[in-house]
Image (cartoon, rainbow over all chains, first blue to last red; front, side, top):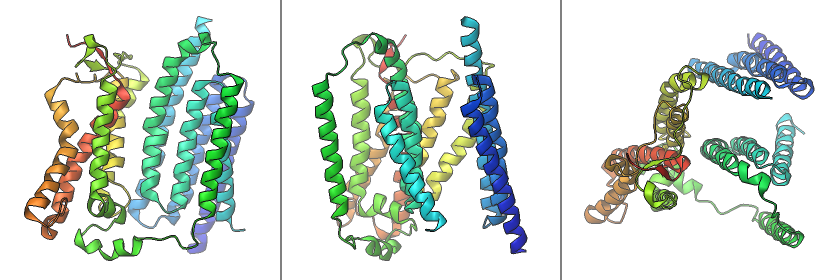
Length: 97
Length: 313
């Protein structure tokens, strides 16, 4: 049982790390603000989501598990809000030009 | 080398890199962003050192509220930055560099010369934890064993807010601090400012409450509450209160005032200044902390809001 849990952790955290890597590459390589934001949201939402999913089997108690999920949800909320704000500011800057 | 050591080496390198970058970068805004990232990474170092209480404070103050303060300062400087031609001369820069190198060398030397087993009071603190029936040794030190320091810290916060307010022009004295924030009431920021505070207030109170037995406490909880208040202010949902309001001033002095009163009570009824009677130690500490979290939240929020700018009308 412990082996199955560890396998799930390794698989999910590795997948999450891949999304973080892809998001970072996108942030560095993509040409403009909106596409860079698109790359970053993948890292934040999916990457962190997969890392949290991978850590859930390792959580000591149900409470710790809920805390992990809570952190992921709060990051989702913050990430979505900030990317909206940045995208709107970028749009306004473009139309003003 | 274990994975943990590799992680620590990478973390230390990145933090040093951020330190250099924050100092060297030209734009004030970039330096402020660099400092926020630096603060959050330093918090990770504190976690690695098992100092979770310090890590929470570092993340809340350096990464969070300090970052907001610096970004606000950068935004205010932006207009003058392009026109300011009087950059410091080479001599000034050289002197500053020499001074910084000397300080860094002195600090490095001090760390190098530390004794192998640093003198510690930790075992005695753990042994005397029964006196307050609080399990978190940091809270025990802050609220009981070195309560004098904590009380004086709160007085320093009060002095800081007086210092900020004294920058107000005569016409705005007693008025509302900071500019009036107008945001789209149907916008994203206003949405976040409606959605997040209920969660944030619960988390803030939880961090405060759990501080008795686990990492956390009034300062960290107060910082979270202050950030929720500031979010509502920045989204235009709430306005900063006029600084002449009596209730506001009562909250600002509640923490240090109650602390001082309990301390004098200890002198009167007990053995020494700030000595809690053993039977009432926990309720007294809790009461002081409740007053302190309100004071801290209000003080940190008002420190960030700035000097009064709008007169009472």
